[in-house]
Image 1 (cartoon, rainbow over the protein chains, first blue to last red):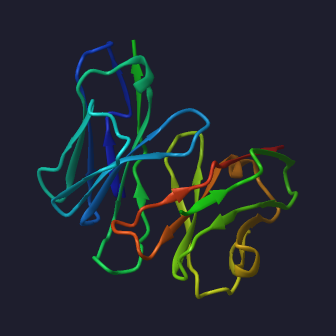
Image 2 (spheres, chains in turn red, brown):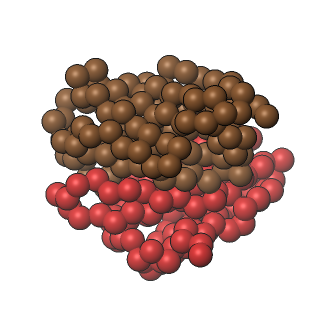
Length: 116
Length: 116
């Protein structure tokens, strides 16, 4: 049973052409994350939603935006993809209680983005 | 600031050998959580274990075992009788209890290759 679903698994886009990646979850977790992972590197957090609160990492480029229309779905929008944005994009979810212990993040299968 | 170091970039073993993946962490918090994730070639990060800083008991799950040594700030992972399906990149990660949103600090990962 898929718990964190990402579509598409592979996405090809053109330089400068906006692209949207999607993530959905069946875990009813209130926290959702987007990571970028380049080859042979650890995942790098771009931003996360804690409930409806959006939290951007300080070094996330403005080119990357996110939307969370409801608990189950979260989108990553890349407004003008550059060649350097080619990477694996991973979505993750977790429970979260403010002041509570860090909870486990569960990851989706990722979307591999190719920019031509 | 927190930091996780996985000094072994790549390890190659022959099937049925035992292998230990090292993880050393730095944190100023007294309460923190440690994680291991497996990333097979398909790309998804698979959760393996979550351990809090107050629980120093070693954990065994089938062929997997974890050795948590607070005195040396290490959380090492051993695979007994390795199999080809264990070939993957393994990430160790840290989350401090004081951080909001369960932020993970990842190590650089260790690529394990198990040869038949």
